[in-house]
Length: 203
Image (cartoon, helix red, strand yellow):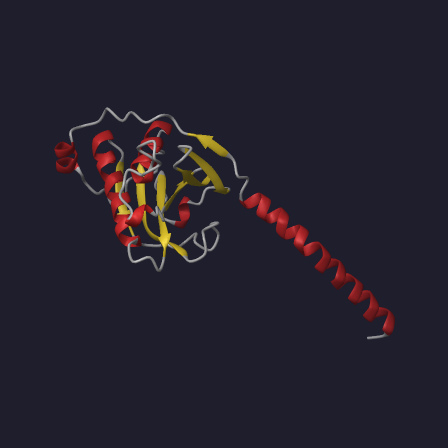
């Protein structure tokens, strides 16, 4: 390789290196637009009696592809970890009220993080990612710190609440572990957090 060819190759390499951060930024912009959508208010005085919900709770291994309605999505996410009083506490108990929990909803139009304080969802990944799991209408990802000794307990409280909500309101559902970490590398999760388990739901 002569000097002119070497210098030309070096300039091309430098140009690529200069463009790389721009390309990465563009890819990140495509991955998540940060759109926030407010959810419908939850009817907190409705539903079946608790004993009836426990009696009627069932797991449907393949819930189906039917998407959940906005009203059901609102009730499902609020049941998982919504705020239920003016002190900001959640519907489930957490150790020392630290609230080290998150839930994501994998929907047809992206992956959305539930924002309990706003009762809203924020899109963190674009595109239909349901095929990363079992293609159910909605898949919830329950997340907590991997080294939190109370993490599994908190996650269990979340999915049990959602199971009871589904028994009351009708969506078919099943808690699953397979492929639980399928999107962990792409999600904007906090350092050291992981998806403990997933919850497949259909309208």
